[in-house]
Length: 434
Image 1 (cartoon, rainbow, N blue to C red):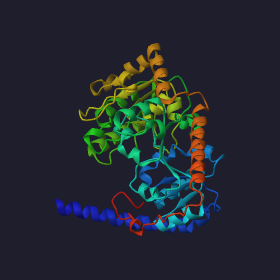
Image 2: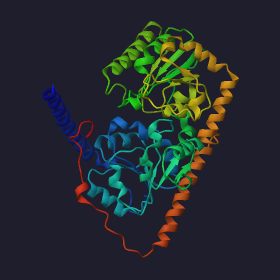
Image 3: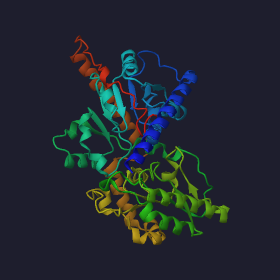
Image 4: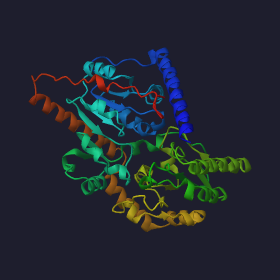
């Protein structure tokens, strides 16, 4: 078994190397599509070192970043050729593919970067952290009550832009000696200002109640096993698909089934069930959604069913009904100090009767009041444009702090920040080199 595993891993490494080299050649061929920003023009960089499998983490920031770029030029720095190609096609922002640390150093030297934004905790973030005369700022890829939201890695950043009071309370409870008041800046959820316009509806609205089911992946350890596809998903989907009064929009996490074969099989079964239901009744227009745009699903669904993930809070920001699938893993950490303490839970044995709960949350005034309360607690003012204004204000605050420190240290020599030993290329690593 060990030899077979080694052979499989070796083949995967080889495929990654070939794919990475092919993609790099494609970037060279399309060089004109990657114009280099004029020297000294970029003051804000978004650093994304991940491969295409995690593009969902930066995609949700495209619209807010395009809005920010109207005030301060923004460039996205990528380290994966595949990510560079896709982000360049999708984002509407300048994209730099900087494979090596030497290339990264050259770009930093020619620009006037004052703020670097990070959407995840990729280990290659540390190759960017070496630069001391800029603010390294974690903006995350969603608000949630997952354990990820209180990782000690928050301390690696100069600042973190967080959603609101719930995030500040969460960090205060969980992290020792973390200066939350100074380092955590609440901005709400800027993405929510763009949800309604993100993507065209794949169906024509009618009398059917639209139920969004947006589960997360299975997780890589018991404490992070929040995914419901294998435990709730099939029964839930079958119940909605069987109803002539409902439409299912199924948007699974892009990593669903990457580890667990049972989870992957359940995901495929739901996708097949949607196709079969549409073949039987073309007017139903049930949707399997794996597209890059996230927004219309949250803004237009009558009821959303999610797992414990950022999708709970993206939906909460809209103020519309939410049901949360209760994890079956006894080890999955559930922080019930916030919204989850009063959420409408869907337990696995009840998944086949999900439409009863759908009707309940739609017609319950107390549930609506509860959502409004927690939306304010997690995001503050959610009126149109308010969270974008707070995002821009936080950026201006950091720009002001940068200018203050630059004046304090004017005339000091710039220390060498290069370390050639860190100039790695992970194209051969499993899961890398796309």
